[in-house]
Image 1: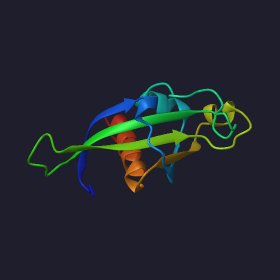
Image 2: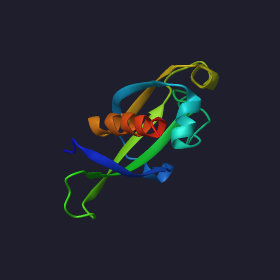
Image 3: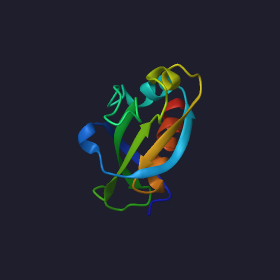
Image 4: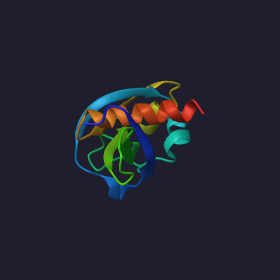
Amino acid sequence: MLTDYKILEIENDESAWKSGSLQGYITESYYNLVDAFGEPTYSEPSGDGKVNTEWVLRFKVIDNDAEDPDDWEYIHATIYDWKEESPEVARQSAKYRWHIGGTSHMSDDVVTKAIEEHFSR
């Protein structure tokens, strides 16, 4: 498990999807997420109508103590709204509580770290 790591690359790509579940939340504006990760991977309501806006992300990360530069791994995460009346509820809010999905708590961690790093530049 990574504890002290560096994000090498972030991909916003539907092919990066790995099934997962809720791992945490982040409170941000839609515009901050677009600034950090690009346009959402999906911006139309899902087939079941539960999600209107979603980023599907793959983070290439490496432990800061790694001796081999090829010793990186991928962490998958999704950021999405959940069961809102319309896409505008999340997209127009100054601070919206977005869901973070993934396969481990690292999904939540890399999203938070990426946003902090993006806005501290």
